Image 1 (cartoon, helix red, strand yellow):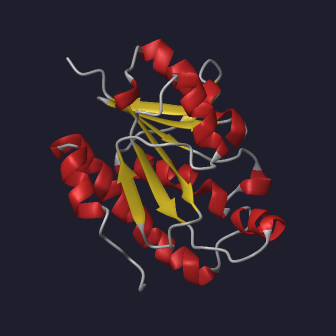
Image 2: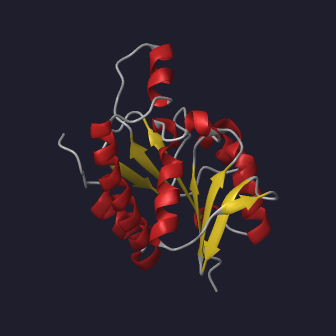
Image 3: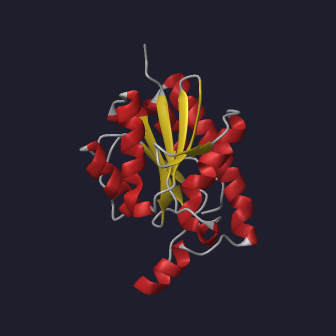
Length: 193
């Protein structure tokens, strides 16, 4: 019997980071909780907001981004999940807003949250869904300001469609598998190029 799928959205806790580009993983899990009718509540053992329904589990780590692996590792160990049963959703500065990328595995790519999860799971072989947050041609400090900045009203309108796309993608992963979902959603876009 399958142990189910754990979907983890990455972000930073607290009002200061709410609705910022770097917290798009949190937004995706919040959106999924509405679609799947799974309520999230603080869970001390898992160090995050957690909810489950059927074979689906949702997690928003309450650790800061660079410690996300502690929270993910706690859930994986408790439910005895394999790495391939974990799907991590996070922001990608190199993808334009309106695009998503689903992969079966990969490196951290400079993302500290992913680096922490790879360290705690002892592998980079777990699925991930990157959500484009646009590109920044700014210097390093300005890039930090950009990813920790809030979406503009125009970007927020696009983001709503992106979150719907994420929901459809993850439903397909559950019903028809990751390969089918990759073939359809990795070429999809909800914003003009």
